[in-house]
Length: 330
Image (cartoon, rainbow, N blue to C red; front, top):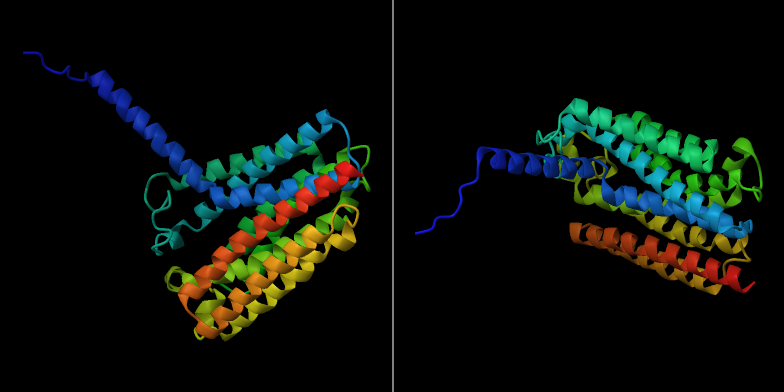
C-alpha cells in the first residue's frame, strides 16, 4: 500500500516563509491605499497629457520619459504618503471598525517598519520625478506628501475644516503632470512660475472641488466610526445634516463650471463633448446631493459616493479623448 510522501521540515519551513512573504507583500500593498494612489496617479497623468498637447510637445522619446516618470514617481510617492498616514493614525485606526484591520492595528506589520517603508517610498518617488521630470514636479510631490501627513492628518481630530485642508494635497498631484512640461523645449515658463500655469490651476480646482461631495458622503456613512476614532468630521458636529447637505449641493454644483473651464483655458482641445460631460455628470451629482438633502440616509449618501466615482473618471476620459482627437486632426 502506497502512502503520500510526508513533507519534510525544510519543505514546511519553505511553505511558511512563502506564506509570510505573501502576507507582508499584501500588507505593504494595503499601506499604499491602492485606490487613492491609482486616482492620484491618473490625475497627474491627465495634467501631463493636456499640458503636452496644449504646448505641442513632440518626440516619442520625450513623451515616453515623461509619462513613465510621472506615473512611477507619482504612484510611489503617493503610496509612501499613504503609508505614513497609516503610521500616524494607527492608534485611532484601532478604534474604528473600518480601519482596525489595517496592517499596524492588526499586528501584521510593526509601526517602525511602516514608518521606514513610507519614508523610503516617498523619497524614492520624489527622486524619480526629479530625475525624469525635473525639480518642480518633485517639489510638488514632496509638498503633497508633507501637507497630507504633517498638516491634514494632525488636524483631523481637531477641526471640521480638515476636509477642506485635506483636499489640497488631494488636488496637488495634477500639478505634478503639468509642471513636468517645464523640462521640455516648449515649456511656457521656468522655475516656480510653472505653478501658476493655467492648465495646472484648472485641474487643481476641479480636483479640489470634486473631493468635497465625495468625502462628505464618506464621512456621513462612517460618522459613528469617525466619532469612535476621535475625528472631527462635519457630520459628527452636524448630526441633523443641514450643513453637510448644503455643502454637498453647493460643491456638486460648482463642479459644472469647473468642468466647463477647459473650454476657456484650452479651447483648441475641447468642445461639445467635454461640455456635455461636465453638465451631464455635474448635474447627476447635484441631483444625488438633493436626494441626500431630502432623505439624510446612508443609502442616499452611498449613491452620491458612487456617483462621484462615476463622475470623475468618465469626465477625465472624455476630456483627454477629445483633446487627443482634436490635436490629431489639427
